[in-house]
Length: 472
Image (cartoon, rainbow, N blue to C red; front, side):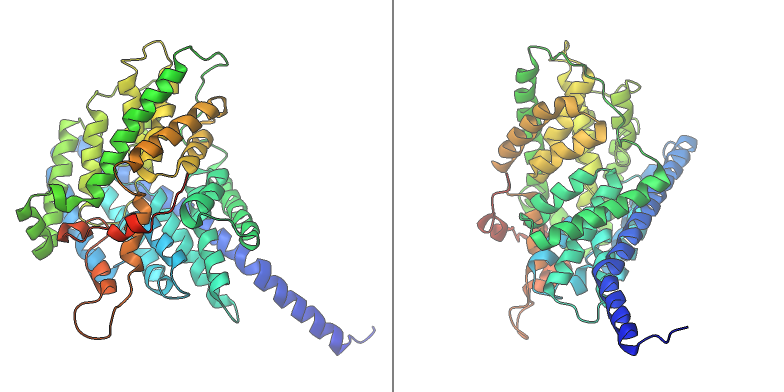
């Protein structure tokens, strides 16, 4: 046997090390994102099934359980998991726009990752109107951000690529929508797509998606809508009216979240500031009452109601979208972890059902798809991401032009009311200390109150309006 040259061994070792840094770490992180996304989805589904089973046995149980869960969730979040509140997307945006290490080490820690999953699971056990998709974005970003420890030297470019890839892969794995993950990274998170980051994002999405597909099978989130090839003459009118209705509704919802100081009574604002756990329990009680009034349809993310409505197996009341919106606001005011993607789609489905009274000759599935994309685009003000998500989730390629038009119009109407929601919320995580002494710094204040209730103390996100950049 010929002896191996020391130079050859050294060259092979260096190349192997280089390949590990370029691909191995990335692939390992992508696999982890896919596995955690599937685990998180199944955990949330199991938790909501447990809540439904308990409620069937004892219909009044939410009046006790939901306020108690709200109080415990807020206490856990404020005590152990600051930075995990809300959907998680504002935290990712803030981290991507911060200096290297400033926000990532604070908002994308493994502790926050664990808290995001644990507390949102607890909240769904209490019937809160939250989704898992936004939290999966922060979980994916946190997983990939912490993979930087495997690099011998890290820098801002490596950190941003990892965060961006993890966040996009998280959304893709949550919805089984790989194209939406890519568009989400471009439109919502960075507003640009650097050439050196594009391959990283796409590769991570592919690997995480393969893991999710391997465990869940090939599926569409809301099934497949059947709209045929012949479109009715009133489709253009339906697109405009649906966009206007959902644009106004989504704009009002975002305004309520960003301007709580203008509509919540003073005593409740004071209660939130002095006794946040009691305030959370009151929100939980309101959610329970709304759930009982709605016959239980407003509990949870709303996925089941939207899916059954699309399949023609559900009959929802005309008040459903408004009750669901109220329950969603109540779920966010305390500042517990939870997303708004799935509940927004469910509310949109409710508006589609409502509009079917006006357009009785149009297929209900068609109106639901239009209203889902319109409401989601109005809330997020990310129209391209919204119509790509709904197209992939419903296999609605035949409606792609109508979905695109609805999303663009609804997003523009929503902007009349408020700046982009996630961008405005991210401002609270971007603030840095003004000085080492003196009054309490902006960064401390930004974290002193969870995601949603910040404006309760009259700190309106004016900077978000000033720094707003066009997104569509």
